[in-house]
Length: 388
Image 1 (cartoon, one colour):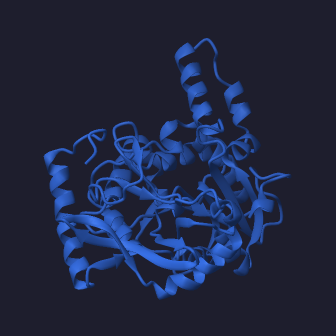
Image 2 (tube, helix red, strand yellow):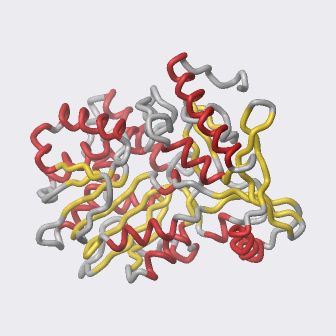
């Protein structure tokens, strides 16, 4: 490991070593090279060992990265206004959060929805990780015990369609991606191999990757060497979410681009990024199971899948514009300026959420509706849909 990254504790290192053994075995069974999406799925979700399954705390100042909800309550309070504008149009609307992280956003949302008189009939949390679920339950029991009867954890999407809001904050970026290299018109798939007793990059023929990458190369007009990634499961994932929504809103918040920006010739090394103890770097093979591995989201792929499923695009906006449309300025105006500590804290939170150099422009919000007769708070005109 680079000397610039902190060393893990012994118990964490043992988890990573156990996962490494499993990965080595799989690589040998596959003839020396596995696809990168197979590797990424194991590194993040292998039961008991993967990053989101091993019980270690990834979120917040003590973890590896800070999400918008972890920054403070402003994000959740604004999002609640968007959700309330949908629930107000439905008789018995529910909310389903996809991967609730530490549970802090669920707490903020439920608290604010109560103030707005818009509590959902049920608040579902789709969480496949037992470790994450336990973390969420502890937080909700501690901070909002009176709402626990409304909260229900799910292992899979409901069989019967629901009416309400399905949303995910920083979920799509953790879906496993395929990596590729394009060089002088030739395509190779980049995977995970084993060399010198450690994980290494390997190349595969990747027949299923060829057609997809050639389409992207034509769009981007690449020259020279170009490496990037794409998420093969993204359309099917979106389809599963639209199938479960009878009426209401599908809302996704993440960092990403429209396809033309994503595969711009100047973005020749892709967008893959790893996070470990608040250090960002580009090596996905360091300490598997102990670092987050993400890739930016192709919002065009999301829009194609959702609209093909009959959903209506409500809007595509930067996080900053979305929060303004949800009334973040009004919430800031309510602050008691005599409380200097709170004023400075919320001011710093707003900067992190809104400034272009922070989350304001990198993060995007996209929404799709079904059978809603009125607009959704948070989206206005103009927006960024022309960049999809």
